[in-house]
Length: 127
Image: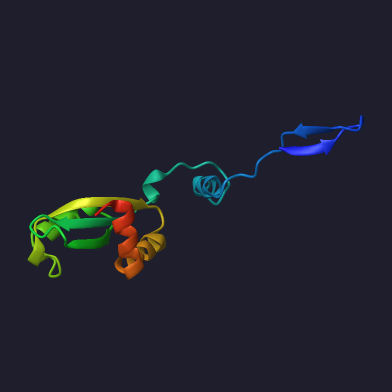
């Protein structure tokens, strides 16, 4: 809303067009190809997932991971094909978050593995 003075000494409120959100701009950018024609190819968007696993045998043990195919990766953890997680298996998925941008997913996973990231996870994911 924008207030402007009217000719009679008062003020009037006018609706102003809101700027588009950043998310909408990114979505629209992805929907257009180089020729400027609409192209809705969802298959080209490969989601990257950050997941948090909790050991069922050692409930205070958590593992933060990253994958484009989390179901396969979690099965690998439970089958003992990962050296770092084989000792505390079986695992259950506590949190799984999808990212459209791989660099953002990598950054979030690294953050979760830091001290402040672990505190964030305890506070927000209720470990």
